[in-house]
Amino acid sequence: MERSEDQGRTGGITPHLTIRDRKAADAIDFYKKAFGAEELMRHPTDDGRLMHASLKINCGHVMLNDDFPEHMGGPSQPAASFVLHLSVPDADAAWKRALDAGAEVRFELADQFWGDRYGQVKDPFGFIWSIGAPVKQGQQQSAEQPATV
Image 1: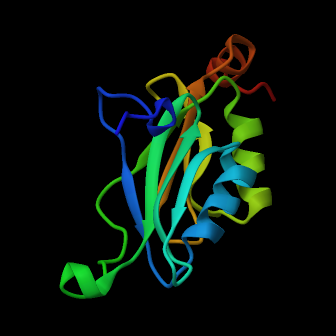
Image 2: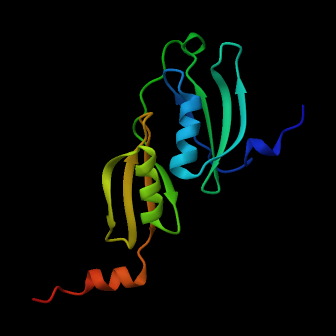
């Protein structure tokens, strides 16, 4: 069997998310709305769960599947201990899109000391996403100028 280009890159790191409660198809819909994901492939099982799906988000790839506790020794663990980061040209636009799609604020979007406009959201499936972009020159200068009374 030949490898499909829709499977994504062959190098680097590609997150592979397990979505609990038979909601992988819902996660794909959310990621399309929230992050502009492009669905590359989807392989459902006979019982309707997704065995494998591949998405392209912000020029990177994410794989996901429904939970299969009968093959993994029990249900998957809740999402924790990592953040999926999106470097974008306009953090405010990306932030608004994510919130409009239903993401919850975890760390408010703001200009940070390292020069990025950065914040974190939690998706409805428990995964944390950070959104960041370089602070625009006009924003950075006005933030550095002391307030006048």
